[in-house]
Image (cartoon, rainbow, N blue to C red; front, side, top):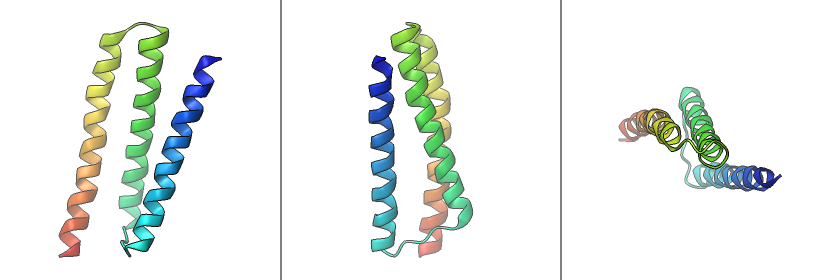
Length: 94
């Protein structure tokens, strides 16, 4: 039952960050295209799966190598997706 609090806190953190990001983009009049929103949502799913896999691998299964390999592979994919969104937005802004 200890994992339920962890997932609740991670969900609250992700939800709060998403609400902050949406209100920040509306306040600054930043608009993204539909496919940029979908890439950001996919990146958020990758990051949340990284949290889940790191927690379960390290605390339940004691598999540290698996946890860090997953972090390396899927963390790199999430960073690449966010870099694509950032480059297309900054190129369009100028």
